[in-house]
Image 1 (cartoon, rainbow, N blue to C red):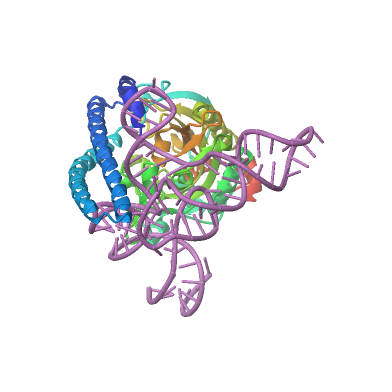
Image 2 (cartoon, rainbow, N blue to C red):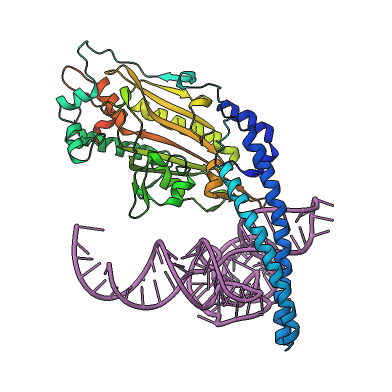
Length: 423
RNA sequence: GGAGAGAUGGCUGAGUGGUCGAUAGCGGCGGUCUUGAAAACCGUUGAGGGCGUGAGUUCUCCGGGGGUUCGAAUCCCUCUCUCUCCGCCA
């Protein structure tokens, strides 16, 4: 949620920047400004009335102490009248306040000035490529065939136990998965991140604070009986650790990491991208989350991108870094870099990470602030997060790119984790 | 799942209808003393909003929501959470 103050103060800039996200905010902002004005006026009136009532209540207290019963009764009447008037104003105030909130929630985050205009993923900007695409024989396989051939992942078994999109990992398939989790966590810890194992289900407040509610309700599994949501990403519980927190300046930057399974309903997903591991309902991911001072968030974004890059490099995967255009960015992001790895069996680039700076958009809802050392003022922090990394597509690319006559070669860096060099 | 107790400021913990945004202790910050530090002493120390250039002023907040009252941290209803005992259990 954009802070109201900055919307009012930089009205034109907000409108212009949101255009990059193909969002016309003109009307909403006009409405917000006028509602805010009405709200303030009402609040002023209500405050004054309440001040008067408080005054009277105090007087009555003193009168009764002094035994002036009759005097007190007379003043009570006055207060009752004021109270009715206040109630009347409040009944106007509440819906206005709600409407204002409802409108604020509709505004996406402002894209950074570096974000290119554009409508779809085709307008994204490839900022860097690395690694080399493998040259595979004609009879190369896609990962779902490799998984079957070596009995690594059983998709049908998942259908039986749960349903489509819940694969079962077996033997070296399972061990490879576990190796990757450990490797990613170790790398994050080396880079200064603190590991957490958070809950996999969250309550409504938590889901709201990171923006999954009301926006992406359909994406989450919901446990009706207890009112819990299954997390779609570790970002949700990890970031919420810092909900309603006021940090000291020297506590920043905060750097968290955590491995969790992620659960996504993917309602409406269909067609070509859903085969094998490409899009599933439950998958494993190591997430990194950072909290910084506003002036340091873009430096941190660069560091996070560099960290993720080092991971795909160590795994010897061909990759490219993509800067998302306004039209392809998420609602909450100000600047996003996606990482894609080339999966040679399918001849496809697969998105394996998305690293974003949310600036103060999330902090505003989280009420995550810091107290600066010199000026005593409290200011909203900036939050960032990224996958480092998401397993299934990494597994897909590793299986596909490393297929040889003798079997699937495990990248050197992973061997200490897997305990085998070949599948 | 059953029975009971509780939720107060960074923490501990008072407060059961009238200057209570809240006693006290600890912690934090500033100062005196000291070569420096500790101790001791003095002072200061919650969050959010409105109005005001400012000093300031005012409103709201004692787990969440609702109610009673001129007036509520204090009474009533409801929800959530925590603790203790019993049951079940990795």
